[in-house]
Image (cartoon, rainbow, N blue to C red; front, side, top):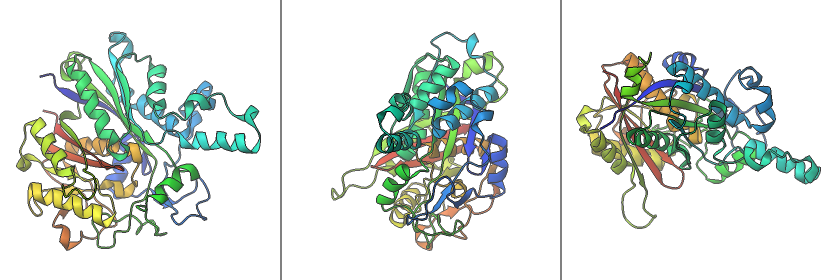
Length: 404
């Protein structure tokens, strides 16, 4: 069967712009969490987020695109540019319909939408941008990346919130197996504005702790919810034979296994679907639990959800049976960008043989029984399992294998 590999990475994250800057900060345990500056969060119970630092859109985006794009889409376009450059892929050398784009989304470009609705309410319809017709749309990242790079292959968008980045990579592999040479895939999100903030507060899952170092503590006895962030990662998924034929500079690893499940309705007595997603992904990759060298956890930060994930991990691998890490403690949960960033981080871990740390958590709560990595740990890594859960019961699991 056709092998899908990752040959390019583009990362925009709260603790680093660009792949190597992000990776250096992550290994050093440098957090990008802080008090929100993109809007006045003082009137809300939650005030901590992960904001992408030092990003000047004018340095990365053509001026003609500025009026028609949201901050989210600008970050996505930048990450896609970097991924294609990193892969060294000349899109003009492939068939016209050879490269597709699959991204993940949550609520779309809510910051753009909020601004235009405010214009409508306060000034009138004449002041609403014509670009509102598409700039807010949840498929806008896929569309703008496709247009910018003239990518006319199979494209789509997955709306499974935090699980979406894994789902996008799983769909990219399907396209590769159908004979397409390459797919731009992943997720970038940004909802740090009141319109994006209030629905998350209403979920009851966000942390209300004001100290950035204490607000997001997954698997800790002091866990009190999650901290949101912005950013994510775009990856170039490519047919291994195509990558070899063009002598690709990077082959970060193989997308070896993928699975997705949906949690049952509450009260049915059936268990959550995360463990089943992990088991199915391992089976899809043809590996046993004992072959997994590291797990990148979903790491909700909500006590009952952390407990459910820990039970899935210990049930599958045994107590402390595999190193578990949550580097998203340095970025926050990035909605549709989170799992894609975790997948990119896992590939970098496989490349360099080091497990990045879970920061601010001295040790997991004893009840969880997991080997939580709290300081960067060197290891011989060949296979990584990445887990994600999206609000609404979505579960996704991805198996990544180090390049030979």
